[in-house]
Each structure stands twice: as structure tokens, then as C-alpha cells.
Image (tube, rainbow, N blue to C red; front, top):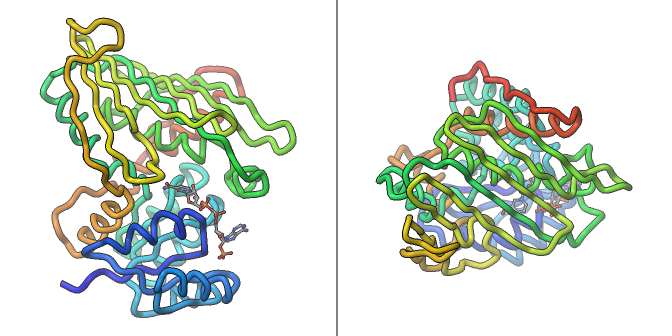
Length: 340
Ligand SMILES: NC(=O)c1ccc[n+]([C@@H]2O[C@H](COP(=O)([O-])OP(=O)(O)OC[C@H]3O[C@@H](n4cnc5c(N)ncnc54)[C@H](OP(=O)(O)O)[C@@H]3O)[C@@H](O)[C@H]2O)c1
């Protein structure tokens, strides 16, 4: 089967530095076009990355009949508009996280998906790393018993105060930027939805975007506690505590470079945080895996996919987290009318 043809909206940093280079080692995907609001930027990116077509507007790329999938890494407030336009132009869509600004916007995308019958996913690239299948297998095998507490931390130091991450109206802030990963992983591990959230935020005093967020999510069988920060040092961890043991995920989230990483597993004989078993993973590019898995999905092959209903459930948690921080109270998570 011919590789699936991808078009890229915008010259986003994530596209130019990670996703397009990763796609160049794909077996089932090829980048055939890139668009920018400024033609010269699209041309420069096309030359740099060996992409055959450059467009001076996003609409022109959507008109190209030789594109099967659109990758949307625009600032967050443009995800709904351009993902919906791409679907209506007959393209499948992989859209960066968070896929929208709130749950209502995800429901709008679900309506467009259902009208068009095309495939659309939120690009939570970490889910493609095999370490998460191993975590789920360990839990299913009762290696750690029932997960009772999941502790997640993800932090970095923002370099650029001029980008959209410092603009509330464009979906700036730590929760939109990296909180969606922690929430997705907590839901994956518990295999369920939280019923409520208690959250607190520290906001940048000039712009109002959240730069430090901490939250407790109340799941039927336990709790997740998460901290995300964008003016901290660089750090990541996920710990899963069960009633028979624990799992420590050494490098759970974004990998700037494919990196060897480990799961450390402890049981009742473990002392402190010292593990008694480890599982190692060779360096792997999560973005390559993501693109090829998506391409195989639209070719009708049997691969994992995450429907928009899953993204709507993640977004429901983000909505409730912001509401909890605003009113300083536990906030229930509204059950979406759409089955997750
Ligand atoms: N999966 C991951 O590892 C990962 C990592 C980082 C970011 N992300 C996600 O990827 C998306 C982009 O992040 P980024 O940091 O790469 O963004 P970025 O470098 O700021 O790029 C965003 C692009 O959007 C286009 N754009 C359209 N309207 C714009 C406007 N009003 N202001 C600014 N840019 C505008 C620009 O392209 P043109 O000027 O060429 O049109 C710009 O290059 C976000 O949704 C983010 O959450 C994902």
C-alpha cells in the first residue's frame, strides 16, 4: 500500500523540530505539503525538510486533493476551527493536544467527525510508547494489586514569554500545555473517569496564565495527584502505588530525543523507593510511532486508536480543574452525554 500523504498546517516549532523529522523515518507516512500564513516561511520549511509542496495559506493546503491527513499543530485556540475545516475538506486529522479549549468544543468536533465520517485524533504522542502497554499489562497481571494512588509531575522552564503559552485567549498556560498528558495517563492507569477534582493554580501576574498547577483527581478506586509547571526546572515522573506493589515510570512524557528508559517495579519486599524488578525500553521515537499508527488506522489496519470521546473526557477534567481552582472547591466532573 502507498504511504499515507500528510499535510502540515503552520510552521510550528513542534512540527519543524520533532514531528516532521520523526515522520521522515516512517514506513507508512510521507509529508507532502506544508502551509504557512506566510508563503516564504512555508517554502523555507519545505526546502529544509525536503517537502514537495509549500502553500501560503492553510486553506490552500486543504484544497490539495493529494493530501490524506492534516496534522494540526496550531496554537490551541485554532485547533477547533482548522481541524473542523480540514475534516470538511475531506482530510483525516491528527490535532495537537489539547484538541480544543473546552469540552463543548470537542463535542463540536465530534459532530463534524460524524458528519464527514473521517478519522480524527488528539496527538497524545506519549500513548504510543510501549512503556504504557507494559504498565497496563503489569496492572492487569495483578503485579502491584489494585492501583490506589497515581502521582504525576511534569515540569519545564518556559523559554519564550512571547509565544502563545503566555496568551490566555490562545490557550496558554501549564494545564493546557502539559496537564493534558498527566490527566490522560491517570485515566489510562485507573481505566476509569474521575468523579471530581480539587485544584489550585499559581498564575503569571502579568498575563494571568497558569504557570504552576496542582490537582487531586478522585477516581472510583483511588486518587491521582498531579503537578504541572512551566516556570520550574525540567522534571518528569509517574509513580503508581498499589496495595501489593508499585511502578515508577522513569521518563513518562515528552522525550526531546529518543531515550532509553525504564519501569522500576517494587513489591512488599522493597525498601523505600528501591525496586526489585526493572523493564528497559530501547530509545524509540514516539512521534514516528504516532504518525505510522495513525496512517495504518486510516488504511483500515488493526491498530490502537483513541476516539474523540476520549479527548472529550480528558477535556471535561481540564474544565473542572479550572473551575475548582476558580472557586476553591471540589468540582464534580460532568459526565459527558457521549459514551466514553
Ligand atoms: N506533542 C508534543 O510534544 C508537543 C510539544 C510542543 C507543542 N505541542 C502542541 O503543538 C501546538 C503548537 O505548539 P508550538 O510550540 O510548536 O507552537 P509555535 O511554535 O508557536 O507555532 C504555532 C504555529 O501556528 C501558526 N499560527 C497561526 N496563527 C497564529 C497566531 N495567531 N499566533 C502564532 N502562531 C500562529 C504559526 O505558523 P505560520 O506562521 O507558519 O502560519 C506558528 O508557527 C500546541 O497545540 C502545543 O500544545 C505539542
